[in-house]
Figure 1 (cartoon, rainbow, N blue to C red):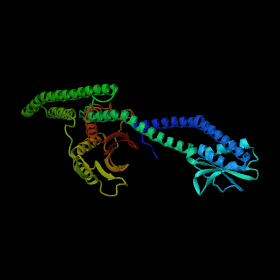
Figure 2: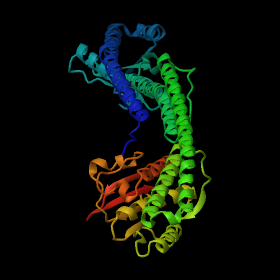
Figure 3: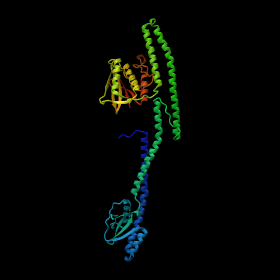
Figure 4: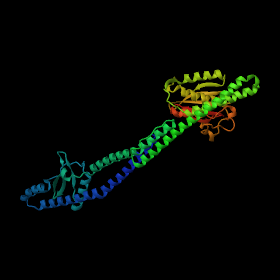
Length: 442
């Protein structure tokens, strides 16, 4: 069974084990250095009293023995009974350790020749009986269980349970106090990654946590302000550039007969590329302004329809397939437009750089979650640049450059949309050559 790899679990387990180990050492030390010596001393005192009482009773005249028995029970709570044979008693006692110490002490005082037995009479369960042989007879001493009192095993079990509860409770409280601010900070950083601004409470907690929260909130506000400034700046640039581009396009329309056709086509292509670059830059700058409402999408049918639409535009260049683990309809509540924009960008990117060979749009499962892959047979992406291609305006030196039509913004937009919806996107080399883009709809 795999243990959770969380800071909370690690903190709780570490504190619990440390406190339990410390408690075990404490209980063992208390038992060895305090409880055992005290129990041994008590057993020694009681055995001395019993041996003295037995010897006194044997030496007393028969007519005074009854008074001695009454005095022994009145003053010390010990019953004394003379018997011709030992009583039947059981050795199963809850205070076995103490009685074993008492038996050893009696044996030491009387010698090994005395057959001493200690136990409980089933007819009198509240009394402990001790059989001591004297002069071919047996003297039975009865001692109340409440008088002996001490029960080390019960005490150790009670202490162990108390320590376990306190250790676990203390560990949970301490771990929660440590991890709760980190959870809030993690949630806030995720929100910033999605383009949102989420502040955390900076009025509660220890000074260090409040100072960290205050600094984080200041940073979040600065990041939000920078993003707003970036959007405003790019919007201004886009507006200012679209005006002269519109004038250039209008001039080309007016001067159609006075400009060489090849030169005019090149100018129109350049103008179109600049407008496309401006549109993608604005799309990236605006980010995801609002969350799209999810709708139920049957993924296999959705991807098959998308493939048919693109096949009409790029005949024979794309096909759709599903893996063997897709054995029925797979419906998920997803933001339709965001998913469509991501797939269109990935497929367009693969078509542009995949050479003449068709690309594959594949639907599969991984750990029960949908996995959509776009596979091409192009030159591929070097391993050290697989993560860099998601950076804005990043283009590879050879195949994926501006001369082939790439702006370096398509994959950046893909990653931004994926992060906003909690999905994961990655690139990896494809076996046999080419590249595979993978989108996890987690």
